[in-house]
Structure formats: C-alpha cells, structure tokens
Amino acid sequence: MVYEYYRKAKKAVVMSKYDRWRIMARKAKLSREALVRLEWMIFFEQKAGGDVGLVVRHFGIGKSTFHKWKKRFNPLNLRCIETLSSSPKNRRGRMATSTKDERIIALRKKYMYWGKMKLQVLYQAQYGEPITPWYIQRVIETYRLYPKRPKKSYTATKNTIVKKKIRDCERKPVTGFLIHFDTIVLHLAGVKRYIVTGIDEHSKVAYARMYTSHGSAAAKDFFQRLYYLLEEKVEHVHTDNGSEFHKHFDNALRALSLTHWWSRPHTPKDNPSNERFNRTLREEFLNWGNFHPDTKIFNQKLTDWLVEYNGIRPHQSLNYLTPLQFAQKTIHLSTTWSSSTSS
Image (cartoon, rainbow, N blue to C red):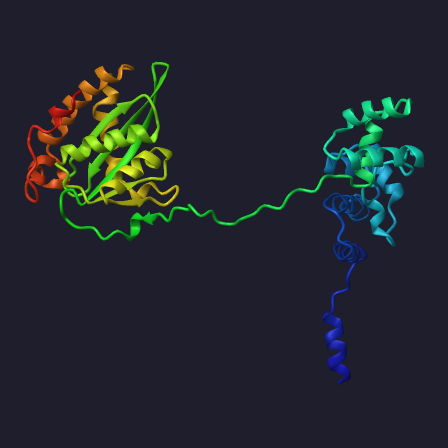
C-alpha cells in the first residue's frame, strides 16, 4: 500500500501559480479585457523574465499601458485588472423645491395631456416666476405623471365577414366552376393604372382590363364583363383580400348566389393560375411597349392580345390546345367572345 501511494504521488503533476491564476480568473468570471491583461502578467514573469520591452512587443501595447496595469495587479485580488467605471462618483442631483414640485404636480394632474412647454407658459403666468421646461419634465418623470392609456377592446363586430378559404374548395374539372381574380398595379410613364385579371382554372380562358381606379366598382364592372363572356356559366369566384374585391364586387356575387372564396393572407400560392397568367401578360404584352395611359387605347390593344391568347396561342398545360378549344369539351362558348368587349 505504501508503494502504491508513492507511485501515484510520483505521477501527480504540480500546478503552477500561473495555472492557479487562470482558474481563479475563470471562477471570478473576469471580462475578456481582464483575461488579456492577466496574460500580460503571466508572460512578463514566466517567459519574458521581467523584460517589459519583450512584453509590449509581443502583445503590441504601449509601455505606459503595461506599467499602469502592472502597478495595479494583485494576485490575491484579480478583479483589480478589470476596467474601472469612468462615471463620476458624485453626481449632481435635481435641484428641487417642494413648493415648485407641488405646483407642477397640481397643474399636470389638471392638464394631464399638456406637454412641458405648455405647462411652462401656464406656470409662469399663474405664479409669476420663471421655470425651465427641463425642470417640469424632471418632475413629470420623478412622480410618473403620465396619462392612463385606454384599454383596447377586442370585441368582435356584428358585421364581421366569415371568409371561406380557397383551400377548402373542392375543385371540379368543369369550365366556369372556379374563376380566379387578381389585380396588377402599374407605375409607368408617370401614371398609375390597375389591370384586373381573371382566369378559369380548368380551361385557362383568361380576360383582363385596365382601369384608372382601384375601387370595388371597377372590379364589379370587370366581373360583369367576364361573366357575360363566359355566358353566365360561373359557379365559384376566388380572390385575394384586396379592398377592390369587397363591397360592390362582393354584392354582385351575392346577387347571383355565387360562392366567394378567399386566399389566405400573404399566400400567393393559393392563386397559382392567375399568378402565371399575370406573368405571361407582362412578358408577352406589357414588356413589348404596349402600355398607354389612355384606358380606351390600351384596352383595345389588350383585347387583340387576349384574342390571340385564348384562340390562337397553344398552351402546354392543355396538351397544346387553345383555351377556347379546351373549354369546348365541357361547355359551349362562342369563338368570337373577346371582340365583343372592346368598348
């Protein structure tokens, strides 16, 4: 047993005082700056052999900086190498008088929503002595003289609309079963215009028209035109939550007993068909210099393009049929429908 004890003792490693300093510094949770300064002291004693020049060259610091912290260093209290606060020990307090405070408190309570500048004018007129806005502000902060904020009421209104979300709509492969609507906002030639677009989900028959306003009356006008073009074979309508699809637009749907489906907020993927049509309209029509601020001229050009889009342009998703050809499989549509809405 004695032999075993001496064998283990022989293998034991003696901890240096510098390692003890590092352990003490970690336990004391010194800052990063203090730990760096501790390494200065360790390097100075352990490797530099007391050569200050070697220390400052190794760490890139000034001699005066090292001497400052060397003089302050105490191995028994490592917190001595922490950065001391530069704030003054004695701070100037608020020069207050009870009479002034009471007067300001009374005025503030009477005129709770008045600011320090108005209270200054009122105080000087009422008591005939000068006072600074800063003094009034400090009284307000010290005594917390702030108006109470009314609590927000979250009671639901009686006319709250329960919106049916498009994700709950059961689709049918029939032309006119579900029509998607959207709006493109244009900022061109120093003017602002709005193009309302609509597309049938099944056949991809699409329609678009430009307006000068963004109201629900314009959206209602667009819907009535598209409803006529589809020969009133519409069952469901889908829009986003834009203001143009409320009021007059929604009332027109209710008058025809059509179901209005809504997209989820900030979810463009709820309306992929219309998003794709809007992109095609930009790339194949708007980007080719067809914009004109006059809605009559623009809509005449747009109608010509829509005739091409619906009646001539093959669609890959429709097995390279045109939308009108594909729509004929489920319902009868006139092949001259687009030209009838140029006015």
